[in-house]
Length: 195
Image 1 (cartoon, rainbow, N blue to C red):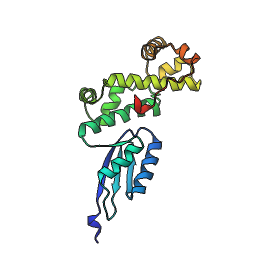
Image 2 (image 1 turned 45 degrees about the horizontal axis):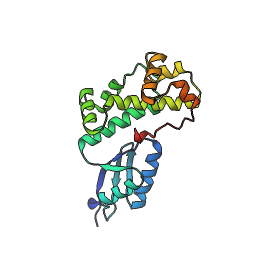
Image 3 (image 1 turned 30 degrees about the vertical axis):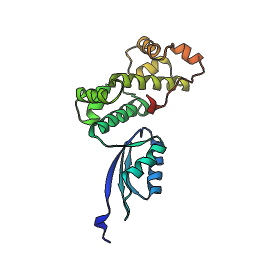
Image 4 (image 1 turned 180 degrees about the vertical axis):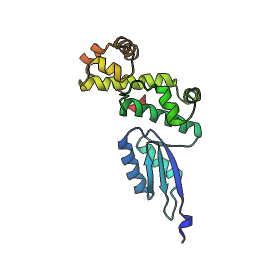
């Protein structure tokens, strides 16, 4: 049998928001009999063996672990938006607070912010702006839990114009002040894929 019959396929995967998901999905796809050529957050390039694995079988495996295949272009864009926002807020720490979220998304995805915002709102049950704010609040909770930074430093890192603005938005979203959160059992954190 010639190699020209071996299928190489690019798969788009929902809910791949952290590096550990890359390792898990790679391991599980290889267990199914696929060779993983390249894998990044949200995207996997695989090579099928002599006997191709169906997308249904791949999706069934992914669903068991909280992921799923993405098929439509707009759903892929929404997932790319989520990954970019999470990357900026949770992984890059937004240490250069001069980088605006909208500029980052436009540069990362190569599409206008108006279009990204419209597509996101049409496919999610919240606006893109609300999603960004919710991600920022979860990151603030994490930073408060580490007790490594002052509230002023967190405010700067998370691109707030003032501690007062951060505090008022935190209370509006969580229903408690920053001080109340610090004094609480701190169990109100949400997983990134649940926001």
